[in-house]
Length: 181
Figure 1 (tube, rainbow, N blue to C red):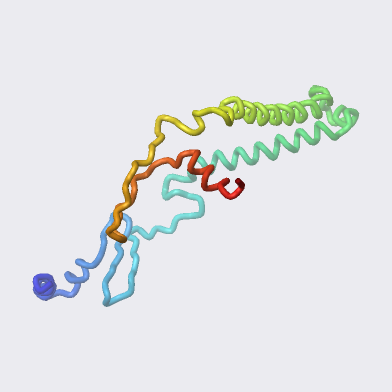
Figure 2 (figure 1 turned 180 degrees about the vertical axis):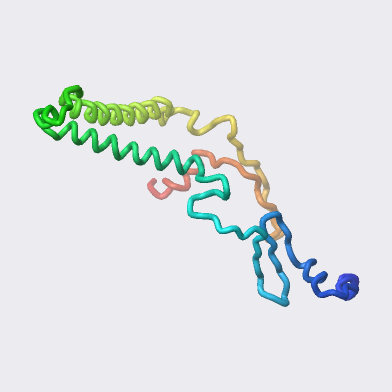
């Protein structure tokens, strides 16, 4: 403690003492000094625009997201125009080549049936992969640890903590269902 105080008093300039209590990183300087409140200073305080990463322009993910959202809106509007506008109105505007109106109902119906079947298949595969309730593989596996038999000492409170182990099914049944007999 005295050594540290001598070291601190050997500095003549308070700025040198201040530097011992600050953390420098490439991005910021954080001071823990008691002389002033905790301050954070950034060396490069350039005003960057919203959504712009420095001088390199917009980030690619932002551009892809914007283009994707615009494309989705345009495709949805075109789908609804094709699905709901009568054919003679489309012919009067000069649009003659388009799919049959049957597909306006068939494609969403097929998609919904496909999603429902995928969920049912996923649940079914999980049921098939689960062993039956009577299987011993539910109770015992490669990582099963049998509890060690330890004789409790009569010394009092100084007993060691038992190592981690699995509780046997007979012990669980005895604890849970002993009152039912």
